[in-house]
Length: 442
Image 1 (cartoon, one colour):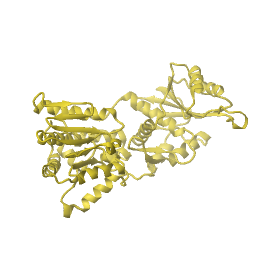
Image 2 (tube, rainbow, N blue to C red):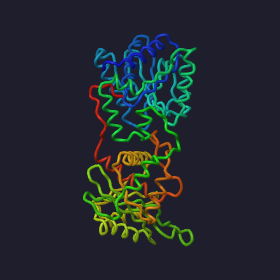
Image 3 (cartoon, rainbow, N blue to C red):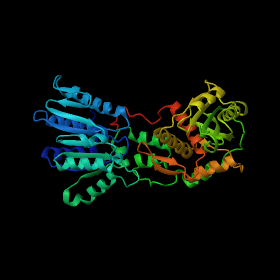
């Protein structure tokens, strides 16, 4: 294990004292992303196992429910420590637990807490700002039974169960002793080798006003329902573009959002048309310049597919076309578009909530950092729809615990098309945040 920082030693000393004396306290730790709380949790886990190696006892580690690799990563950290300090044969690692002598560490997702039986000596949960009120209540109940509980989290909208527990710990500090620890971004940068470079890389990648940078690195809550794009930056973005349909050098790409497909019913129950929005942009390095929009409508899906194909092949010879359908039943639409666009050019984007959250995050980052530009105002229905969607976009809780941009009012897919193209660029470029090879990464 790495040499701990001063703030890690400070937190570890308080938690270890509580554990050794069986006080059953609930600690809250607020620290920026990457500040070493995962390493701290692993060191505390190793300490608790060592203390209970003869007497026995169970420890709990709550792992993220939407990251299947998180449990394996947690166990790998512990295994590395066990290999360094424990004799071979004294420890073992199973599918959902690890053992050192008679002591046992159990790994569970938040939704599994209710079904856990037995008493725990210690329980730890990272990303506690994502825990439900029921999960936090269950962990507090473990503390009532004598377990030392440590919740590590960050602010979101300032109203999570973790946030309320954090405030309660701060208010009770004078009478009950210190139970809340806040690692400021400045302290993490001063004490953790390489961390300042990571923060600078995150700021360059996301933009200082990005909700993820605000909550994860600056430790500032962001209000649910706040505008997704700062007004000043949005005005600059909407006013600084060049003429529409002005061809520029670079790779031409397109995104197509199928917003309505003909129903399979008959007569009055059948939808009269199929609609889609096609977005064409030029990519040059990491810069994405939107050149044109096509608001397409046709009497049937075959006609719509031909219209989209002409726009993304004849009008604009796009090298790739990324398609998304909002309809659940779109097999026929997919077949027709694949035929019209060509299998080599067409790629279908997933429509799950997690993917859309990542797309909106990437779009906000591109807008804040100047990597996105739009065509100038031209009074067209497409431009008016695009502007309305971006001006009305507000931050809403996302499927993966972050804040996603959601259009208030009619959503015709214009902003979604931008998001698809920006996220595709992020995926092709790979991770860009600075690595921390020697630091106590979170």
